[in-house]
Length: 38
Image (cartoon, rainbow, N blue to C red; front, side, top):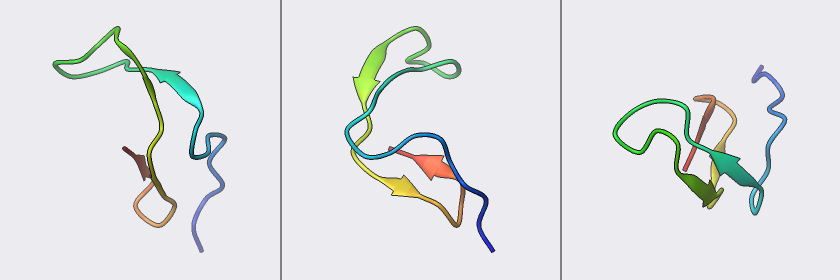
C-alpha cells in the first residue's frame, strides 16, 4: 500500500535538492507507488 502524499498535480512547489535546488515549479505528475513527483 502506497503512503499518502500531501501534494497533487498542479501544486506549486520549491525544489529542495539537486541541480535545480531553490527553483519553483508546478507538479506535472505524481507517482504514489514510488513516492515521487515530476
